[in-house]
Length: 148
Image 1: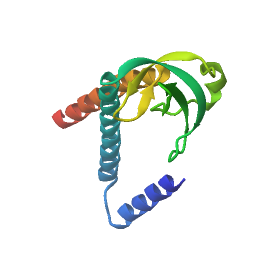
Image 2: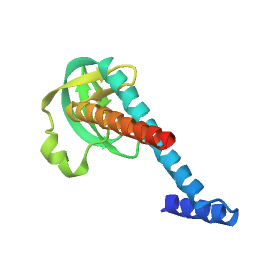
Image 3: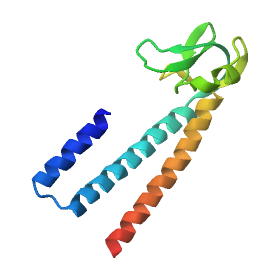
């Protein structure tokens, strides 16, 4: 809600300062482009963390919030130590996806102190693919607009 209030204030200020509608639209498109680029960089980072992880067996224990986190994540025990999953767990599918005490193959990243379970790996790979395609589409659109 606050986001829309901030956008409304920015638009009103732009109108009061005499900024043209074309310039405001261009600014909005630039902002969307930066968000798409940031999303790509985020998924590149997570993909690098994924490929530098090692495959291991883990036992699922629970879904709970991290000590400083806002979202519920899956927790796995590896070698007597509990590790959280890197991405939040989906609340609507928790009972279908995670079985307490079941053994899973996960990717352990010691540097981050977290694991990539099969759902996090899927999220990371599909996020990288779609953010790459979105960035490519945005770059092509900008290049076409510049060439006109």
